[in-house]
Length: 481
Image (cartoon, rainbow, N blue to C red; front, side, top):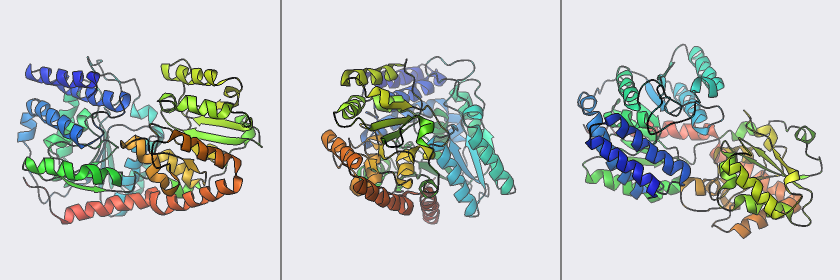
């Protein structure tokens, strides 16, 4: 466990022992945030770390929310809506999109749905002492998504309802508010997008707000007491971690059922009918070979490991003067990550950077992706939703298995037979070169990847899998109380 992460968890323990329960919950979340965002899930990337942190979380929550936990009463005849908990809403974020898609699938299954936005990943008032996020409220950053939820509520005649927590006070204050609110709905089922980095969502799960509580994985699953089932978004992680997590729960007198969908899902079907933007609008020659990337953490993904330098060297190689690169997503040249990327291009030699276009964030990247020839999935960590969209656009994706953590292997899992099976950087760029130079091979790869995406990875198919898993869990009976 990285020292910075371990220090946060130790701070949580000490604060809990001292009776400062709000700080303890905050520090617990800070440790997970640091591990996920800064240390590539060094602690939480597998079952041993998940259960270790779950034990810490249960100690903190047991001291902070003992009365809320004790007040839970199961209701086998609960008639309320299915609760879908999401940490925040952000336009273009896969979790936000999937929460809306899942809500729609549940409505189509004849269920009532209540979407609860925990609003735990933005600045709070007053500012917290230990864990601080930038001011990115869902009301602003996710306005189009929120509007879609409002439209769904109207179209369903109120079968979908929506609530958003305030951001005043501590996470512990919001946790208590959320628990009271969720329990008032008399729900039989609660589906939770989140993990231990989401303190309000974590507290909701631990205190219990529904008879059946299911963690919908965000890559790092929510593992804590009173999670009855975990649905992974990566079958490989289910095979590796599922039995260990189930055994851990069983040893504590609990039951944790594990399942998996193929992936979180992406918009593969619709991507194929989106028109490409003209290359001239991107300031790219029509006859160029265009590499394209898209990520809502573009600078971070580019600057990780050797990716930026490897990309720069690839483009600077003699004979590749017609290869251009387009990046969609936030990129601040003055940031540490941005400066590292620019330095990598400087080190590779003159010329390559002039053929790069940093386009910034876009609400819909598909039209730009379709203007490209080859999509690059980054290493050591790459995206998932963007890969599916590129495959749906029939733009072939270069991806490799850089490791076993979710972000290190999800791209390779999605691409399937075309993926580089191991952490082989040379093979990655050899494949990129082949698809740049051989148009028939490139087009063939794009066609087979689109077929795979539409049949297996499209959000419609994935959401039907979620509903099927939910039905199976309901049919097998609720958790022991």
